[in-house]
Amino acid sequence: MKIKLILISKTLLLALTSVVQAAKTDTSSLKAEWATMNASKESAMVEFNEAKFGMFIHWGIYSVPAGIWNGKKIPKLGEWIFYRAQIPRAEYRAIASEFNPVHFDAKEWVQIAKDAGMRYMVAMPKHHDGFAMYDSKVSDFDIIDATPFGRDPIQELYEECQKQGLRFGIYYSHSVDWMDGGDANKLETPVTGPTKRAWPANHWDPAPVSFDEYIQNKGLPQVRELLTNMPDIMEIWYDISGDMTAEQSFQFYKAAYDLQPNCLINSRVGNGMGDFVIPGDNVIPDDKKLARMKLWETPGTLNNTWGYKSYDVDWKSTDELVFWIISIASKGGNYLLNIGPKPDGTIPEESITSLQDIGRWMKINGEAIYGTTRWEVSKEGPTNLDVSGTQHREEHGFENNFTAEDIWFTTKGNSIFALSMKWPESDQVLIKSLNKSKVNNIQQVSLLGSDQELTWKQAEDGLSVNLPKDGELNEHGYVLKIDL
Image 1 (cartoon, rainbow, N blue to C red):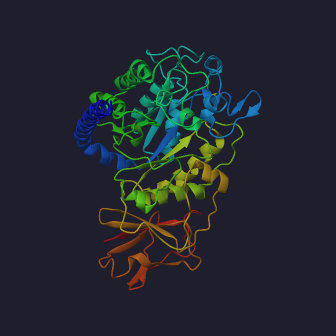
Image 2: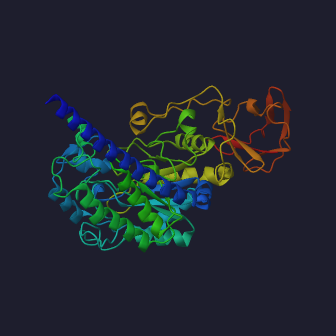
Image 3: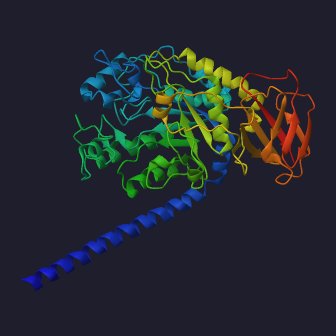
C-alpha cells in the first residue's frame, strides 16, 4: 500500500509540475508580446512627459448622495459610497433617476483646465459603481438610458478637448464593478480571512455572474466601444487589478492596443503590463521607488476625496498645490489633479479658485515644468515632507514650513531650473547644488516672468544669485533658469 501511495504521489507531482510549467510558459509568452507592444510607444511616452500636468475628473451618480446615505455621513471617499454603505444594487441603480446635471458645460470645463495650465484631461466613463457616464450600447445602466439628462458628457468633453487643443484620456474601472460582477477575481479566489476576500468586491449583494463573464460581456466590450467612439486617446487609467490573472490584464491591454496602438496604459491594468507607473494616490515617490520607474503619474485631490462630498471642505491651498507640482516635476513625474463636480454639473467654486491660482503660477513658471526631466539632484534644503497618501494628508494636513534654502530642480535641453516656494528676505539666494565642481559652464541666469538682468557669482560653495529687490512676482516663490 505504501509503494502505491508513493507512486500516485509522484504521478500527481509530475502532473502539477507540468501545469505550473505550462502556466509559466503562457505568462512568458504574454509578457513578451506585451513588451513588443510597449516598446512601440516611444513617441507617445515623449508626448506624455511633455504634457506633465493634467485634469482628472471623478464624476458619476455617486455625486447625488454626496457622501450621505440614509441621513448618515459615510466615511472615506465619496465615490465609494456604494461599497462603504453596502447599498443593495437595486437601490443604488435608482439613484440614476435623480441625476440630471443640467448645468454641465464641456466648453467651460475644458477652458478651466486649459487656463490652469493643464495640457490633458482624463475623464471617467465608468467607476467602480458600474454606471456608464456615456452612451453605452453594452449596458442600459448609463447616462442616456437611466437618467433624465439625455446627453453624453464624456463625448462632449472629448470633442471640446479636440477643439481647444488638450489631449484626452479616460478612466475605466476594468476589474471592479459592484453593479455587474467585476469582483477583481476576489470572490472566486480561495483566500483566508474575510477582509481579504471582501475588498474590493461587492460581497453583500453580488451580481449573479462570474468575473470572466463580466470581463467578456461588459468590461472589454465597453473599452472597445469607447476607443472606437473616441480616436486618438492619450491614456487609459485602469484601476485596481486585484487578483486578475496575467491573461485577463493582457486582454485589457491588448484591447486598447488593437484599436489605438499609441494609447498609453497605466500600471493598474495589473501584472506588470502598464506603460507608465502610478506610485499611489496622493503619493510622491521616494528615491527607492523612483529607481524602478521610468514614466509615472501621480493622481491628486483638491481636498480629501475624489468624488463630490458635500461636507469635505478641507481644500488644499495654492501653496500646497504648488508644492505638489514642483515636487513631482523635480522627480520626473506627471501630476493629474482631480476635480469632483456636483450632481448639477457645476464644479465647486473652491476648486475653480484653486485652479485659477495655479494657472497664474503656471503661466509664469510653466517652462520649468512642461517637458522637463529629473536632474541629478531633485531637491536641496532642510525641509522634507512625508507624502504617503490621501488618508495621510487628511489626518496630518499640510504645513508650509519651507525656507529660502529649500530648492527643487528640473532640467530640459541645456537648462537647469531652480524652483523655490519662498522669496529670500535678503533678495539673495545661494544654490549649493550648482557649485563650480558640479556645474562649471553656466552662461546665464534669469528669473522666469521677469526681464530684469540678474547678477550672479559661482564659487565652490554654490551659485549666488541676486534677485530683484521688491521683485517678488507672487507669494508662491520663484523659478530661476540656468542656461549652460
